[in-house]
Length: 117
Image (cartoon, rainbow, N blue to C red; front, side):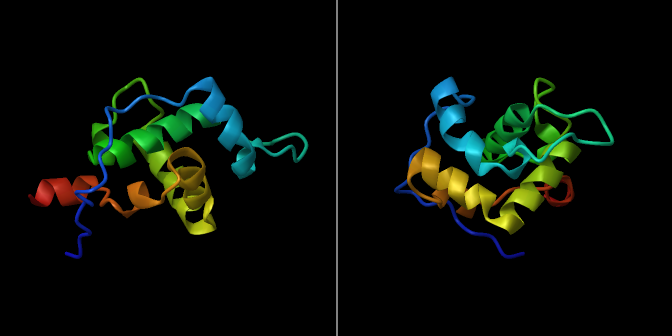
């Protein structure tokens, strides 16, 4: 298994959800927050909750399935994580929040990885 070690020089304080100021700064970076007219299909999900969920996993390095109930379902968070990671959205968010992409270099554990331990 190919793992990326955490950077010991980077210290992450205890996880805190996005402040209103942080949210205002990064909301324009999220494609879902752009006004493309009315949405169809399933009810809209709170994108801020989704981002807080993804950030919780990136910050804590816990498996997606360990996400607390206060967040969106882990499957939803993981789907957005994959979409945003591929599109470069998470890179832009990390740079806007932390001025580094180091949090994205940390290994994120999936349930299957945790079960194998």
